[in-house]
Length: 167
Image (tube, rainbow, N blue to C red; front, side, top):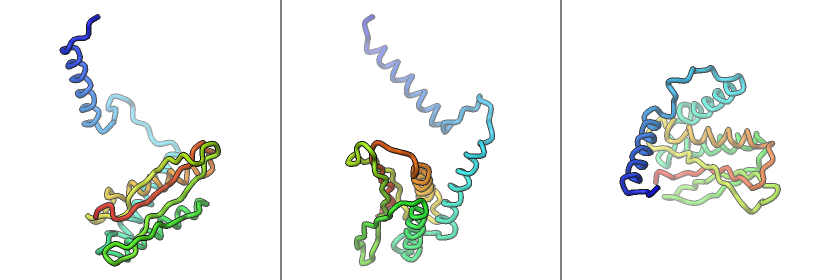
């Protein structure tokens, strides 16, 4: 079978339509029966929600203009990682005359420890309360760190939390 330009164009159009349909439904399958989360999944959902609430509602806007809240968010993240058993490191630097920091926890790989997978999220925000900027990302990486803490990994994993992504 000879592959023609029309065939390639048709395949591209079909793939674009499928991608658009997936994007418009946000990955939801409206034809599949909806199920309640399993108890284990419900616990995860509660922890994710608690992280998002802490960062977006209790701490609130966190950036250089709201520096105490930015520091409070960093302390919260470091505390959570420490409670999971990780040794937490900070990369401190000065930005507009204020000390800010990236927070890193590393899980060493057993076979290829010099190969590193990075899971990261920024913890500063611009628009209050910042649940989607980026408390949800921070919550996801925190829970990933918690879930992987006792699981063996071939490569190292660094859980990184950045600030000043907005600047």
